[in-house]
Image (cartoon, rainbow, N blue to C red; front, side, top):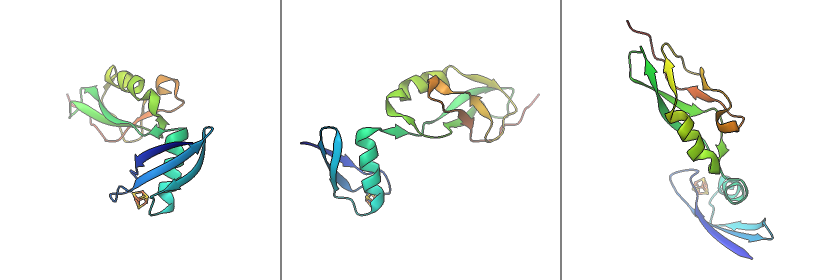
Length: 122
Ligand code: SF4
């Protein structure tokens, strides 16, 4: 039996979760004060994922950088690769919220999208 301890990121309470795992299968989650903690713990120990938020360089815009995020969760072990793709990306203004900035980033099947509107200037 493996035991992992995690801090739940579901809300500011930050409950300390204890997860009992046998043969790769979660047997029990304790320490959670709501059902979301149970769901988070099971996912975190079997298939951890995250939304990535960042910015890319934007040319000819009224701001120098455009904020972006992955449209949905990506596997946690792909975060560095996704960040490298984001850091290498330069786009041209204008861009609007929801515009696809990187299609299928790092072969995750997830797009990186704009989260701000940037107007073209000049
Ligand atoms: S278990 Fe529930 S109450 Fe505790 S931190 Fe997670 S979401 Fe918040």
